Image 1 (tube, helix red, strand yellow):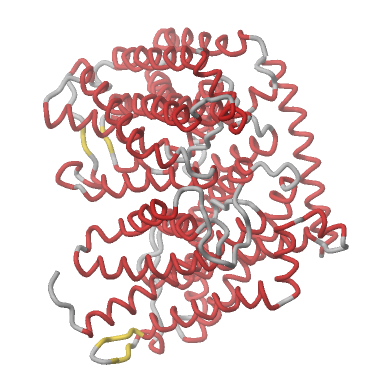
Image 2 (cartoon, rainbow over the protein chains, first blue to last red; image 1 turned 135 degrees about the vertical axis):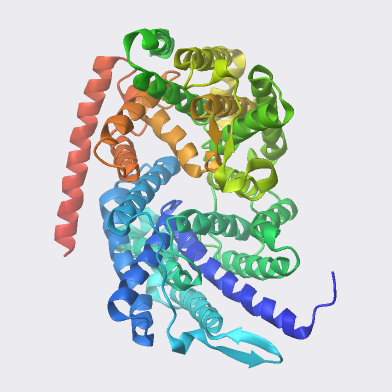
Length: 303
Length: 334
């Protein structure tokens, strides 16, 4: 390993943080839904892909301007969250009483097929691309390193969203009720809280987060149906590495994996996509497979 | 459920399979061959999920290893198919031996996620080792004329059916053995099994290895029916298909994946004439089955055909009720 200059180091650090926070969006949605509802949402990858495709539609209509991007960032997650709420009410709500994890997983698997089929129906199987507006495609110079504006935006958005989730869970009444629902759903509903509405809200929120990840990722390369798998595998790995249901763990895992992968890219670009697997294997071996939690902010004890 | 429900449909299907080339045209013989391959991956999933309660979403990993090792041994080492296939099965079992100790000890939901990640890891490797696999362009199998599906369809079909029958019989013997019974005990109550002195993790590892071998047989046979191997043999859709056919036919019912593979094969074949969007079709099939009969159509009907019809009707009513309720709730909410 040759010496790495400060500029190169910072370059890779910025890229890694951008990658890490991008990972966090899909992983956070997945983890929150698992933590509160106990549903492992396989459709998270399809939602991410759908978000990216819907972003191409918004940008095509409004134009690749700052306004178009702001609209895509707000509208797409909202629409996705609405669709998620419908799916939760129609499909998932009936499954909570029996709570068969496998059946719920299969329902979300069916959902992912339907979303992917729908995307092929609407957009065809070819790829789409979107361009960034001038206001987001520049870069800043920092100690000899280049910080692309868009990477900075992703990092700021990531920190904001992570902070918002934390504030929501620990600073508001809704967050209090959500945490209470994890502990004892029946008791909460007997206290007069509409737990169904709460679950719908959490699921919609998780879906919205995943779609937001897709929107943010859309200018990074061609938008294809492959996005489903390329988004889902790292999200699964982040969630398992951070500890199922552990939001702080997911954040730390996502950012560390992003940064490590970025530095591995510098040395051996072809092996970089293997980083998530390697990090996960090491963490699991050290922590033990039983999933002992080292970190607080656990929203669900695993089965 | 009588014992006949377990082996009756299997024997019927195998006999029907043996008569297939006499009964139908080449097009359907090829369809039959692909059904047999799907059935084997379904069987490997059923061994894990139906009998041991282990929900694997990575059977594609072993299916793909079976396909690649078979084709690479034949192409690069000039090994005959009949030696390459067993070697591929051994390779897949070795993969299970290496990955299994960690996987069988992890919590159930993480088992789903990590078996899925395992298959994806292989897909990445197959796509990037271009020198060996040709990457995304695939590896064309160099087969002797006697095993060329275009030249001698029926012969290749009978090889596939014959090898598959061996795997099915082996799996059946295992399921009916005391080891199979112990596994079902673990499925029902792992803690109690452990208290009784059963080495739960070792038993789970054992069935994980067996199921890897069965999936690899399917992968090796796919080399004959498809004649080319792509990295997409590792795609999660392969694992999902195994799940769908098992569910369609009945979870934990030995004949389940076989019935399911025939059903899904027919559905995809006929619907495929109207649309190329099989994603939507398979999604609807999966959704209907999960809502109507979560333990499988065959299981809900207690294994008999009239029973299956009753189960289907009962489930359809339940689904309609649920849908009405869901729509009503939506209306009420707005």
